[in-house]
Length: 159
Figure 1 (spheres, rainbow, N blue to C red):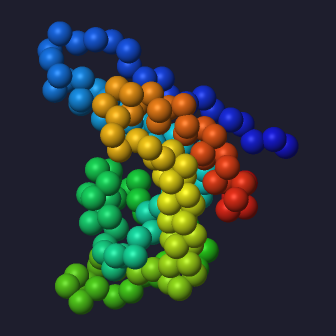
Figure 2: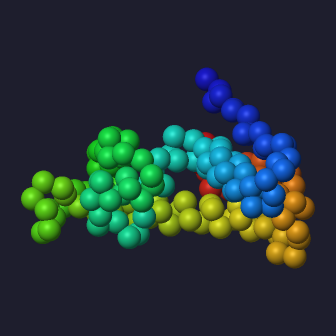
């Protein structure tokens, strides 16, 4: 069965008369959605594993607040990470009920692998972009994301 490929989010093309600040906010929101889509294209169902970070040792509510979501959104992901041996739940000396989510060596290895893929994608996408104006930078990003993400996925062996 072939994986379903979703289309990239569309960029807002609306010109606001509210000025440059509104345009920057709109571009930032569009970039967020674009980057989330790119991560899903690269990692597929592994995207949720991005919750893993070398700085874990935080409670589920703390992880949720840092991502702007509820604890109920993060808990199933943490439970899955624990089942897969990528994280553990340790006693929290500061709170009797809220355990600390800690990364395992297997989880740290996965984070390193994902960071390597990310670095490869950014290297491909970012070549020669530092001197471009914002609009040209956005257009270059959009034209390079698909090619870079597919190449990085193949290079990393991620399906």
